[in-house]
Image (tube, rainbow over all chains, first blue to last red; front, side, top):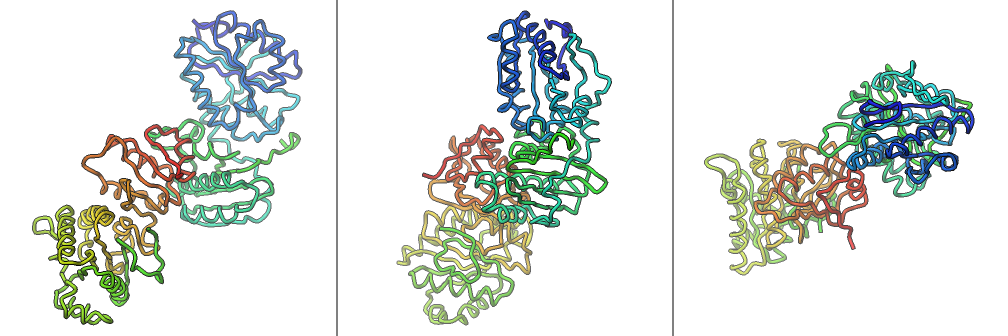
Length: 325
Length: 281
């Protein structure tokens, strides 16, 4: 039996909420969480420490909630999806008919790169669809850049507000279309300079050796460089195998990161969710792209008339200041 | 000991070595080097190639210092047709019978007081068609397993001008020693393991790796399929999954000894269950 606004609803309900001050935040999340406590439903609170503290002091029974540190949980989208799916599977196995969740997705306002989280917000409409999950992703309008808020509005089918309403959003877009139409992402400032590697149609081996040579002794530790080499191998392999020639590898080493862009003449993966959803050993496609998402510190995917570009970042991704978005 | 060999390095100490050549003169230089070092070590030498035995004998006797050994009957000469048992009346090797012939030849050489059996072979004629190569690859694999337990060694030469690089790679990858550039990876016998892998296993050799693994199928595997991965420069996720699947099909858990960090990393990222990676101690 599902309860609250969700009563009678089956499956997944993905909501956002926009708030401008703490009381507004609490008037959205507290009744939502108390509802879970009263109904005996599991509730997960994956927020940053400052908001966890607010919630802790305001809800009916904090001990009935599972708190997760958002800074740890939202490391990279592919891992977050996998972790949530495992968590939800466990609750369902224990007989939960509905699970409530408050999730605080990172963005430049909290010092994190946004692009792959925009794709995450779109993809989870699909990725959690097989769970009885009622999820609210609140965004603080005091610190969230405008571009992020626009993406959030387009990726959440429902909006929760301080007056207790959980209404359908008029701005929600089909997730697959949102992902497909998402074209020009922000270039890394390093890309303004000449690349240290500029190879056309490299073999995976040539790409690996070039990245290793350029990365050695640079910003990345030995393990990080190994990971980047593996990620570039996957991206180049995908471009050679599934994309269209020419395949172009460019790499820019920076003081605290290395950026690699792999472009091919094709239109990118046919599956708009590829890379974010768990790849299994038996699934035919998407394994390489999913691995790059598990390995890199940020990834952007761009489609344009010229082709498809995957941008891999190892090290500390560049986060534009909020005013630039 | 194993490795990819630069043209300037000596083949003398190599057990089972593949040498691709572009012209016959280049082959003769290597053949002489390999035969002479075998004679110096007290091994019986068998010189094998296509064409008539007389022609081969003349060629060998023309190599520096070889005439006296040929005269003295210290060196055997065979045509590939005589050296390799074939399936029916075809030119496709019978791998099991051919390996049995090598074992018998080795025992005979030992009984006659030699320290071992060393074959110097131009096997080009056995590797012209895809069907020939598939059977010959299986033979190379089985022979390689013998070279790690018996005093049998072989220089397997292939004419790359006649066969092409891709065809030579199908056979070169089954030798612990190959001329560098002949094969991007190598699969060969090693002590205490089913086989060892070395080099780079990625998109470039994906199909070859699948085909090569198929040649290694053992008839009675144990609960574990143990291989050595210490020589790997890279194995990409597809290659690793192929290997795990290979073990699974044999009903065995894959164990990778001396697994480099990237292998452990992939196993962890892919959350693979039917594989265990053992780090070298």
